[in-house]
Amino acid sequence: MTLSYYAARANLSALLPRHPDWSHAQFAAALGYSTAWVKKWHKRLREEQAAGVPLEQTLQGHSRARKHLPTKTHPLVVEQILAIRDQPPEGLRRVPGQEAIRYYLQRNPALPFFQLPVPSCKTIYRVLKRHQRIPERGKPLHQPLERPKPMSVWQLDHHRHRHLRAPGCPCALRFQRRNRVASPRQHVSQVWLPPVHHA
Image: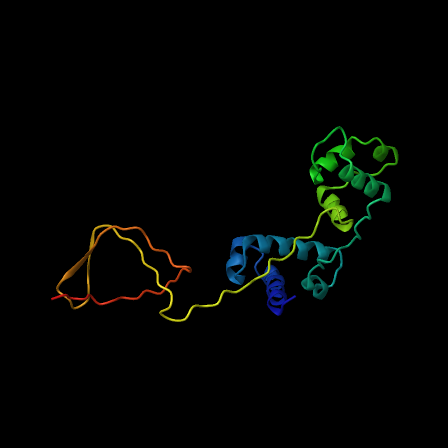
């Protein structure tokens, strides 16, 4: 928890008894926080003060750590998940995914008989991943291309009937529309060539 959060909560707890007629919007404007934040901490300060919780402990906030350990998937459920994945039931002509496996688990009479809950799609995905039923995707190998030497690769673009005037030159050059000539690599650099005057 940062010190600024602790200070804002302490300031709110100090302003509440001084200004009992203020609205949540006035507290939010004075502290620079949202109205929802003021409502949340006003309620928490009032409830924990009534419960006898010390103010210093209330200002620390609640821990976001998991309060209950996640339930472990029963081995029978894991066995059914892998069986449906390896041998699709009812003539299913594709490899069943998480949603399809969960659909068939809901229809399995063994789970309610042993009072086992049907796992979520996320849990089924983790089981498939843990038992190598979903292959790992390899990272693509990056092969950098060598930059060509300056003035060794050229690229030309075609234009419609346009007049391009060179800086400081009164004459105008007219280019006819032709097929584009592409270079082996694309470049963003542009090179301007001065016009050549023939006698």
